[in-house]
Length: 358
Image (cartoon, rainbow, N blue to C red; front, side):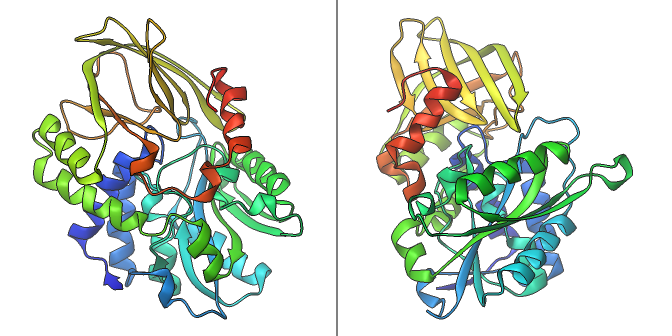
């Protein structure tokens, strides 16, 4: 497979990515802007993992931080600089880039670097849905005791004294914590390139084909965006499972930016149930009603679709008064990476939101 991205396909990737963001995954509008910028800057090519030579390595491109942070400042040049730093430090032949996840922005992680540096995008993101913690998008590398993580991060506004370039080598979890702190120091967000691995490791542990899945969902959205309920029905049919839980109005949003994450809960008044509570840790983690009935639990996909625009909403942009459609897609119908299948990793969610996950 070798697909040259054009503007229509770029839009489909971003729209579908936003659906798989599940409340996170970055700003869809910025994703559209930077996807179009990438194809203006050069050629963006998506290839399958089998096309990467065995003697080459694949690295992950991502953004790390809190989407709602008020001083976040990230430019396309920061993403390019991050990958250039990585190539200088890692000193391995880089044959491809993969995104850390799907999302309204995350699906196009690496596209600008691909256009400028001529490195193909591999259709095997570390996870087929968005997730909050870097370890969830690290394909199980944290379980390899001798694996040395190499991570580079760039971001922040120079005029405000927040610009930062960070190079970290070490155990994966320690390196991820350093990068998260870099995001805090940069004002909330950094562009990251990390974790060189062989193509065979990606085949076994990444969400192989998840970019293609997002593009197909995005095409359904392009055709049905004016009718959100029909759009969701067709997405559920395409994915082979899922459910529209209810439609309603957002009554309350409690959000706190803490340690480089957005954490909080949203209350929605439904049409068939009086009250739903959604907890989030960047992404939507749980969906319950007032009686405690659980409708979705991360890594299930919990999606909040704006009934006015037909677009999925992130936790950072949901506001009181929004009219929304609540949708769940069971994890069995999403292409997931190894990182979000580990019960020990999922226990991190319990510690943050205070609800049973595993």
